Length: 462
Image 1 (cartoon, one colour):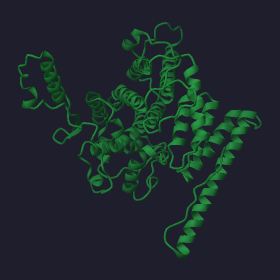
Image 2 (image 1 turned 135 degrees about the horizontal axis):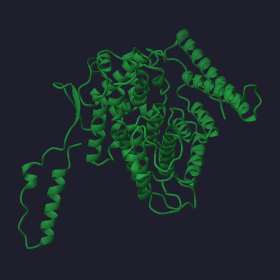
Image 3 (image 1 turned 60 degrees about the horizontal axis):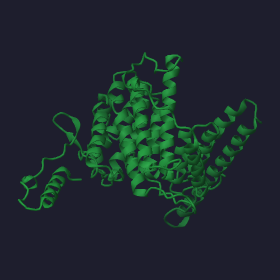
């Protein structure tokens, strides 16, 4: 299952080029050895061979795989092995993320990761879906237990958290397979699951019951699903939904999740720094992706894009002052972003971060225990990315000729006077678009004229 390192020679000739080639080969060999060591620890975890139990072996395997990824971030193998570990502990969200990262690496781990993702999605679709949420969930407070539960309040809310995760995993399995379980319409099945998922997610966010690390993983899965190549069904399989239709459903799901969690930022900004740092770490990749690769959202309707931009504005405006002031210079890069090197949907964004940091994403660093430093680093990354998206980059970002915001699909604006973000409203229709319809004996012609004028007036520029 393991194996493979990053090889390749260095540029230039003579001794310098040979030395670079030897170094690259050595790094690749080290990465391969770490993957193999991780595999051995994983086998021990499943056999109960090592003293200390399966948990210690699994943790050791995970450490080996992440060290291999740090040495050879282009390899998808490490993420496939991390996903296998997640599957063994029944963590479907981490498993989905790992298999997607294995497939979206510069050197994808195919066909193994693709087959593993297929098996996981089929398993998820065959499971019983989470029960629908109670209508009362929308009005509950943090001290209220969800209805129908005899558990302690904390346990009841933990169950709701688990259900929104299960709903998200099932949704992505349906979107990957491109057909619903047991027949029927995929869009209607997805719409119902999405509605229930977002109802739970909004409730958990409102009462402060969101685990930031899980939110971050969920966002990476949503982003990854928009970049995966369309699945090709096997011979004899029922007809599946067209790839363009499932991409639109995936984009709508991402938009809904972003809108659901955006209000958590201003609330967290007035609380302790450690939870805020974790939340901003989860949102930093989203902001970077939204600034550099949001062309994947072209399938969203204009109003949905405006809602997405409105949520980004809420996130940006909710950032603490320390994060905004830290964006005056290139922010240091945390380990959370370093771990995303090799995730191709973020390649452009991380390359820009690397240039700002002086040549490598790992060039700057923030200690894991430095909550204030992490708030400034992640918050400044978000703030700078949203400024770039809004067409008003920070000075250091504007000086980077390679930094180009992908703002064609998201109508986010920066108002210098109020120092705040806003989502642009649809412009008023031009006078010629609202001219009275032509008088015609053909009522169908009049209706066609009205429809054409309305469509011209309702469509904002991209």
